Amino acid sequence: MIHIVSLKRIYTITGLVFLILILGVVAISTWYTVDESDQAVIMTFGKVEETITEPGLHFKLPWPVQSVEKLSKETFSLKFGYKEEDGEVTDYPSETKMITGDENIVLADLVVQWKITDPPKYLYNAEDPEKILYDTTSAALRSIIGSTKIDDALTSGKAQIEADVRDLLSQLMEKYDVGISISAVKLQDVELPNEEVRKAFTNVTDARETANTKINEADKYENKRMNEAEGEKDAIISQANGDKAARTEAARGDVAVFEKLLSEYKGNKGITKDRLIIETLEEVLPNAEIYIMNDDGNTMKYLPLRSLEKEETKKTPAPDEAAIPEEETKKGNASEEKATGEGGTKQ
Image (tube, rainbow, N blue to C red; front, side, top):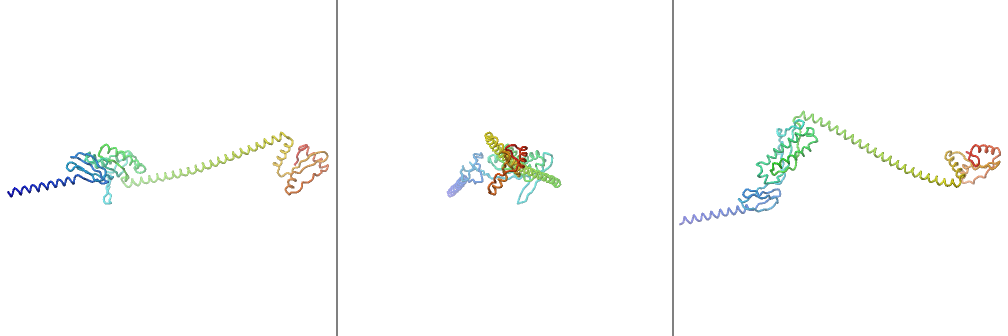
């Protein structure tokens, strides 16, 4: 009887222990947390149900009904052709040696930035997605380098190579469907396999850069001279337009004066004609002494215009008309007949 009671108690205690353990497992396995840098995959009896990307505390059915697999949302770096550990870089030339489109050998290594964008596919569509990414990177880089000339690969074509490798690598990863997306591709080094070839190519590159520098300087000088010529041309055109406007206005003024003079001439032709002759003589012979004479018989009377101007300047009265001797009158008549006749002019 005593043994029966003891066995019953043992079974009861054991059952309670198992019940407590089961309840403990259920209590612990019904909740989980997701960090900001993580994403979780919920599986029911091994089948993917959903992907949780929101950080915080979440609940699920207890194990073994549902389980959780967490993956990082951060960006990973794949180093192709070299390895870096504790600040030391180890190269793998056998992996980076490849042939260019013009049949030259170069060493090329790069870094691929990638992320897990589809956790279920990353977990279950491939056994080793990172190995697939590495092999695909090698194939994409060799394909692009194989269609690129060595000059472009070593100098100015690196950016284009990076873009082409990224596009091709993204297409291949989408085709393999392993839940990985490519963020960026960065070429680290593209160099020649030995020092002699490297030195010769460096000399060629330096010569090409010098030629480009000279060409740029020549273009700069040409642009400068062209700008100066354009400025001079604009200045000449502007001056010509100003001269044109000034001459046009002067011509209009001359026309107006001529029209006014014409109307005066039609009203009194003799006076206007004499006035024009006198003004013309003053312009043509500015330093000559001009006299106006009128023959009314034996005596020739004259009016010395230049003397009058000088006397007006000195603010003195005008001189009276003076008589000219008969001899001078005869000489004056002879000169007048040769010059202007009655009412004429003499210098």
